[in-house]
Length: 311
Image 1 (tube, rainbow, N blue to C red):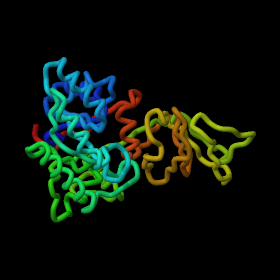
Image 2 (cartoon, rainbow, N blue to C red; image 1 turned 90 degrees about the vertical axis):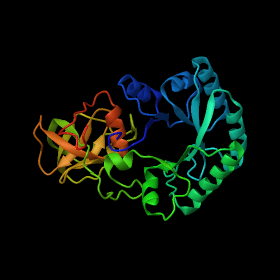
Image 3 (cartoon, rainbow, N blue to C red; image 1 turned 180 degrees about the vertical axis):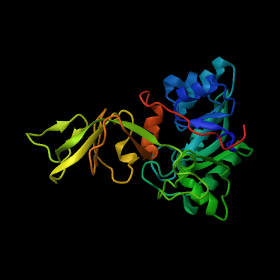
Image 4 (tube, rainbow, N blue to C red; image 1 turned 60 degrees about the vertical axis):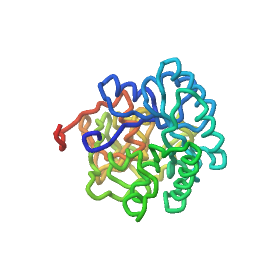
């Protein structure tokens, strides 16, 4: 991403930022999720900037930064309607005043998040609200904000097609770049690859089985049991991967393969004919499945081919 032009890297988990720093990544690092009070010392140690909504966390960051002898940048996240994280607009002046009063903190920007919880779409209306709030904050601060983070991958289409992005100068892009699709409607994004990631799983059992269970049924480890239709014997195979490793609803199976069930460690598929035990199946991944696969210690990651960008 850095070779492709990204000006910094960000993650919601401080452990990931620490791993990047230990690996020698020197680019600006931002913690996206509001820090826990118990981790503020680590956030100050590994992140240059963090998104924040709570005065009590700002106070913890201030103390941690003071103890470490450095300043820490904060971006205040405001609520624009999706109802995940964010300071309500009417409460922003008080939170800004709190951040300005605390030593060792630098208010570097204002940000917002949309389309993650309730699918609220970035548009001219909510982005205009963000612009207005930026102006209000800058009046209070007496200088321009360095960062106006309009949102995530769901903002990309708006940013590319709106006649005026206003004050937005930052987007937090992951899904759009990695999967090459617009999160709002899953349409391919021109110029990007939709097959950069492939999940490969091995068949550990295969044969003909009834399509409907028998016996008295109760709940499973993952909640209510499935109620499959009885369509006679089917070719059922089990792959050595499960909910610990992937989101089964986020898998894109190859043609002729249907995902029919998943437990913690087993993925069940139906095919026209039984698969060969020891053979492999390849799946495309949605964002949820990719996140789990890339963070599971039980999924090996292999980079194939060569980089397309010069070193």
